[in-house]
Length: 210
Image 1 (cartoon, one colour):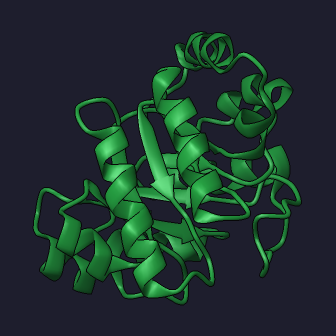
Image 2: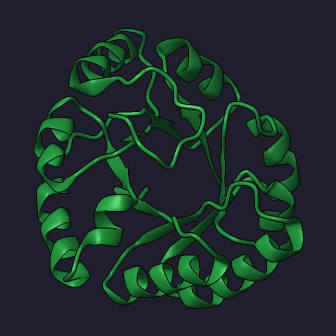
């Protein structure tokens, strides 16, 4: 499992693709294409281009749209709480697909583990404009509490912190015991993406596997 992912964000399909291209060119290892409220055909066309950009360079997972991931044979999907059940997605995508799920609490994680996810996106760390229906903000204390409960219960699944994460947040977040992070706005705003990504890789080196 790679230690961080870029979640795409843009005002148009073209902006999504331009940002994905810039991220992959700079060394991003994993892209999640997230296009809320986008018509199916537009999403499919954008995902097709995104797959070509990521080919042999980065993993590409699709947010929500399992049928698009299946049709294009992308690396997997990320499923929100209102999306298809991970176990159903597994039947469609097969055993090799990366299937992740959104969690905001320990009980959410318990459910996702029973559903057979490969990783959990736990958050939000802080308020983020990319989430229309925001769950309670966790902060570092929230991560500490949930990860400690997981350890006591012998629940072992990679946990990615998500939600408004900035460069200065990374060391403290990693200290909580999360496996990795998901980023969006911070990377979109970075002027030198290659340098920013290299720095992120260095910060993630001491992260603890759970």
